[in-house]
Amino acid sequence: MNVFQQSRRQLTLYYSLIMAAFLVVLIFFVHQSMEWSMESEQARELVETAGRIAGGQEYLMQHPELMEDAEDWRIGESDRLFFYVFDISGEPVNFSRASSQLEPFVMDIISAWDKEPGEVAVVSDQGKRRNVRVMMTAQPMMEDGEQIAVVYVGKDVTAMYNGLQKATYSLAALAVLALAVAAGVGHFLAGKAIVPLVEAYEKQRQFAADASHELRTPLSVVMASADLLENDPSISSPFLKQVIADVRDEVKKMTKLVSDLLFVARSDNQALKVKLSKVDLAAAADQTIRLMQPLADKKRISLLREGEAALTAKLDEQKMKQLLLILVDNAVKYTLEGGKVTVRVMAPAAGKIRLEVEDTGIGISKEDKERIFDRFFRVDKARSREMGGNGLGLAIAQEIVNLHSGRINVESELGKGTKFIVTLKG
Ligand code: ADP
Image (cartoon, rainbow, N blue to C red):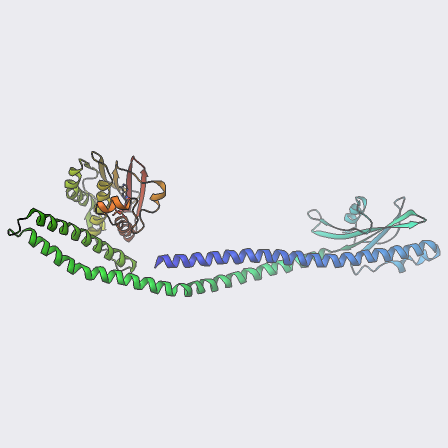
């Protein structure tokens, strides 16, 4: 079932990441378009105002007597607009001043002004004086083709940009909220989507469990019958004797496959329970070696035991023996004649018992190492089947280790050998 939960989580994660990327792009474009529309409106207004002021100033210059009333030409302070008219010698001839805080900054901008007539620039001053933004434009005043003065018009747009920033922040907050809702909905829907899969999988699992369970009885009947026939003195034909031996062999393999299948099917259902008791792991290793000795002798493989002579821990005895048998059986199976297999039971270090099964066998390639714990995975199917393997051994080994909340790792080099390392709570 874990696989389903994992893919559900993965689906939610991918979905949320896509949504997040989409929202970031959306916020970026919304921000850009809001900025663009506000800026272009303000800029248009500024250019218009500059034209209006230039016109007014021209009239004023032609009628100097009106200069006394110059205030009339000034624009009110309230709307954040300001202007300065400088003649060609750089003397101010008219102005509506920016606020005292802003003026030094505005003067800096004017002295460094290098834009084309009618061009609008937004200049920001971050740091020294708080975050200030000013939008400015300049318009030259001409008389008989000669420039006589320049009108600088500007506007304090700090509030506008601050407002824009706040709007973007609240949009981002909304997006985070939307993302959380989307992730929740995504998780819920992914859960719904996998329901039929879980059901189908559960049916398959139940079928495998039932089938393997039901097969056990007929198989033991066939086995018992084959045993009877093998010991029947009336059967003397060597051919028949061979046939009976072959039947026994095949039934043995099948019995193993069926019990492995049952183990795997039960493990999916979390129907497997560990029966913890004080177990001498070293003694279990010795027993496994005794069991495997005849097979090892056949291939002239030396079976060695290293490490502790006795080591008790709270484990499931049956399952530990099964684990040892799987690992040592594999080590013997995948080691060539004359090789060496070592079983090490090591005393707890940092609260962990370490069990190692090392061989000098054919080794496992890097790519295959990732897959050997998968069910029915065999590097060389023909070779494994020939040796009585069904590809379930390491899947079961991993399951047993997981049931004990331990870890199983493999270190291997092609042609040199393999080492399986099991760490268990001490
Ligand atoms: P099998 O029944 O085929 O041995 P396992 O699940 O026990 O199935 O092992 C899966 C595959 O991992 C094997 O087919 C074999 O290719 C590889 N393998 C397992 N143990 C060893 C080992 N000690 N040395 C080399 N290859 C191994």
